[in-house]
Every structure is written in C-alpha cells, then in structure tokens.
Image (cartoon, rainbow, N blue to C red; front, top):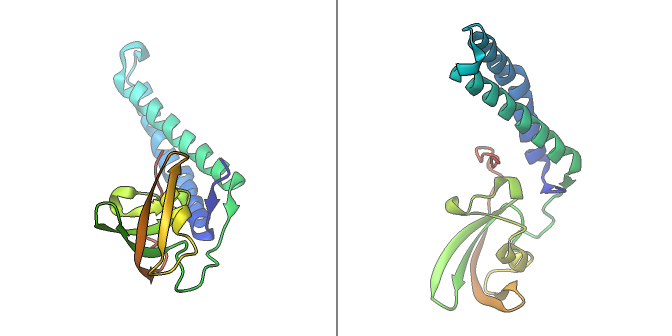
Length: 167
C-alpha cells in the first residue's frame, strides 16, 4: 500500500477504527445472534446478511489498520503562493479553453466528482510547486500530454468534513 497520508488522515482513520470496533462490531454481533436464534440456518437470509455485514466491518478495520501501518506521513512544504497539498488551484486547459478548479488532497480523500484530486494523479504531480501564471505540461503517458495555464492558487484549510474514500 504505502500511501502518503497526513497526520489528519491517520487521525480520521483511527477514529473510524475505534467507532467500528466499539459500535458497529457490537451491532453486527447482535444481528448475527438474533438471526441465528430464528432457527434453520440453511434458509435464513437474515443470518447470511448479518454475517456479511459483520465480515465487511472486520475487513474495513483490517484495511484501515494496514493503511496506517504502511503509510508514509507527509506534510505540505510548499510556499503560500505555490501549488501543494490542500491548495485549491484553478487551471485553464489550453487545448479546449475550459477552466477547472481542483483541490489537491491525499489519496484517501480523492473524489474527482467533487473537485478533489489526488496528489498522486498526473495533473497534480505536474502542478505541484508551480505558481499562478505558469504554463505546465501534464504528461499522462509517454505518448500523450496536454498543457494547462495556472489561473490562481488558493491556500485552503484541510477540511475535516471530507470523508475518507471507502473501498
């Protein structure tokens, strides 16, 4: 795995693990007990659904624990006027003259539909360290790339309301 995460990402994951262990695990075990008490397990849909829910919760706990264990802690060391982690950038795509606004986040907070792009994405890798007014070539692969002009860079706080991506 070896994701690059911030201290806030780790804290959020630890909070989710604690909630899953103390609250959801108890609920799931209770559901399994209730379903098992209904009798014949061979045709008991509630029992299989409860077991599946319990197993999904345990899988998520293991996944989060493994991510924390293998994570590389990062911090944004870019200057205020440079593009970096948790900065919002407005870019003009030269080819079709469209303007898009993105916030650069860690991989676990990535959600392109909400304008949150991972610092591991090709466009973020190309933009990091640049300033407003720069023209940057984004290399997607060896045979394809495109140019963007950086319109603005905003310093945005790390939003605690951002949910961790579910897998």
